[in-house]
View 1 (cartoon, rainbow, N blue to C red):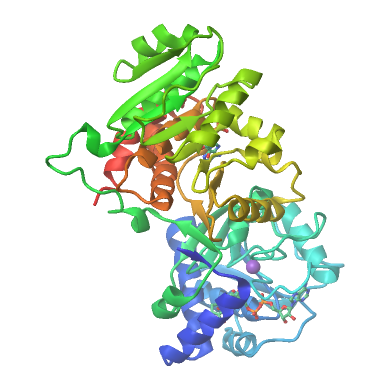
View 2: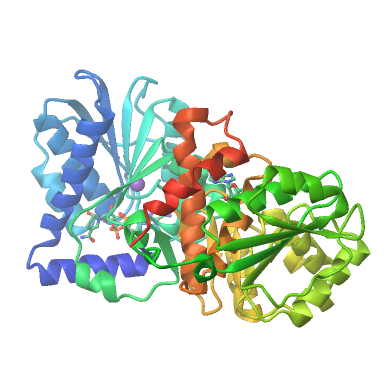
Length: 502
Ligand SMILES: NC(=O)C1=CN([C@@H]2O[C@H](COP(=O)(O)OP(=O)(O)OC[C@H]3O[C@@H](n4cnc5c(N)ncnc54)[C@H](O)[C@@H]3O)[C@@H](O)[C@H]2O)[C@@H](O)CC1
Ligand SMILES: Nc1ncnc2c1ncn2[C@@H]1O[C@H](COP(=O)(O)OP(=O)(O)O)[C@@H](O)[C@H]1O
Ligand SMILES: [K+]
């Protein structure tokens, strides 16, 4: 699913109006109907509850006016409040004229705002994608007032004051919505941690925008849905054998962190790899043999950390990093690996920290490698803290372009940057996965998919990120959020992958 800029959204609206031979007021009515239906079907406010619709001067306000009319017709006690300032759009004026006279409709006076109580529902239709600068004056006063009211706030299209795809000053006024109802597609702003308190729970309301134009528009950002990935994992052929699915090598673990190697190994096995060899320091040999009997184990001569690279000849993909530690000799193992490997790499955790601390190693990174940092590891990798989430995405995009690698930025809506530009945001996963070891599980799963020669690097990464989050979601009925362990995610990798098989 594409994430459109505000300008592309406007163009898509225009194309829809033209191609479907409807008026802009018809499209607005469609949008308003989608909002009203959501309110009635999902929010289900009790009859008699006060519903306040706050409208700005543009088409977002026009949506609000149409929603107010529809809610009134459905029997709700609605009142409409209008911003005093701003030039009214044509569709605002149209819907202002259509507003039944029985609905109280007044201009807002910042010195005498309506008494919005905590049990009320507020429909925020002040500003949407037409926002051209941060809110100030009257609009900012109203937004701050609504944020303090305690009412349930439902934002139409976008929380007012929030830019759809660009940062705003830290102290600017933005609606804190409980729900944001976005037309047709989500917006990039919804996927960034810094906007969580503005956006609340977001929903996508389809309004039948022109599919062909949407299909052809080129974008920088994608939101990857299950529908798009279903069928992308090739079925295992009837006469497939373990050689068909690749032999992976995992370099992981140090004293006290052999668990990371255990988790990554098991996730790799559950990810469908044909064969797995796990290389750990000698202290880990028995542990791996007992906990992951399906893996072959190669012990390093050093008891505590990795010091030697094994012969790489047998392997189709190599993973390095979980629990590795940052000893000088492990750094040299990483260096040798980067210098000699000819197969795809998955690089995580301490291997990333070593890359960050040693720019000479970074220069050796083979194109096509897959890196899986969380935000702190990413900061070490690029050597510069990000100003905000948008800047971090810029850094991510530039890093992938410069190194010709695939780089993940982990978190809710994990982003994947590709060498050729676009970012892909993952749609699965939950906060229960914010627990030690879930990153190790991701590394193992990605390693399995990179060892499968039938998959492109992009598909392997997208499928792995999706299945990892989906496996985490599948654990929830059994574990809840707090009780979710990384090993629970591993249990559900199989079912999560099965959903994606063609
Ligand atoms: N036909 C369409 O184009 C559709 C548009 N829709 C709605 O239209 C919205 C976009 O409408 P508009 O483009 O009219 O934009 P908005 O309604 O978001 O706001 C534009 C108006 O606000 C003013 N403005 C912008 N920033 C301001 C600021 N900081 N302080 C004060 N005034 C400010 C502008 O000068 C303009 O008058 C969408 O978010 C969506 O809600 C929906 O009805 C779906 C169909
Ligand atoms: N709030 C969240 N929502 C969805 N996924 C999450 C959330 N928090 C963490 N995750 C996922 O869990 C994993 C955590 O990885 P990482 O931070 O490396 O953990 P560790 O180093 O403990 O293994 C990542 O894949 C991340 O995307
Ligand atoms: K809004």
